[in-house]
Image (cartoon, rainbow, N blue to C red; front, side, top):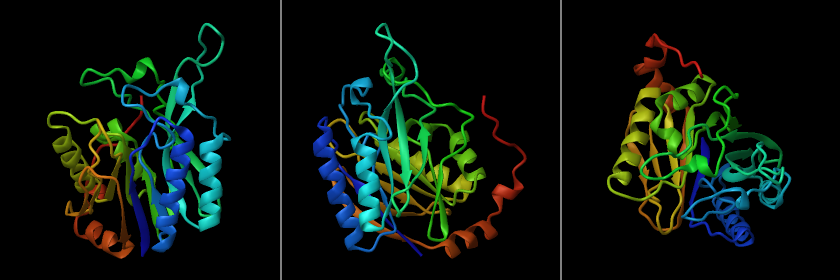
Length: 270
């Protein structure tokens, strides 16, 4: 059994305040004996009108350094969204766009890996690519082993592209984590729920969408089992919830419905 705490938090533009918020989430996770804490997209800093280079911190900056220290102190692994400096150069020869990223840190404080969001949110009247650069589509998927389960990562808008989820499952993920700041709007909450459940069913995987709370975003973190049954669903308010995931139950569903073995197409990045 692997115990996971979902931290549906309201993230501010104030990075120092967000580090205190993360420390509180770690404390809550440790108090219930969680093995893994999952925070939303942009947990290091968020502005509802856009996130860009002004929010970026390097991997050895204050946010990831705090994650590593807190993980080691509490013995709790963590997956959290952050913003990194991009690789392109502007007129001043510095990066002019940032990277929407998710980091995975082990319970020993070691940095397991980084996922750089592939699909940027250029939809519904928003152009994330004006401020952010995409991660490489052919990068190795980010996975982290916690207990007897392997957790894989995609981010927010990636959820609308089933190939992203399938590629992570092909890399061995039993549980798909989807940190998000899912923008509110007509039908957006309905899409969020339907897509999370669909990704669970088609991949016979547990899917955990961890949404940001607050103005302009949807919240509504959700856990769907490999059979599509929703086992946890939150509303819009900031809150912590903890669930236990059973690898034997996942294996039983995959034996009964071997759709991953039966498929006849592979996912090839382009």
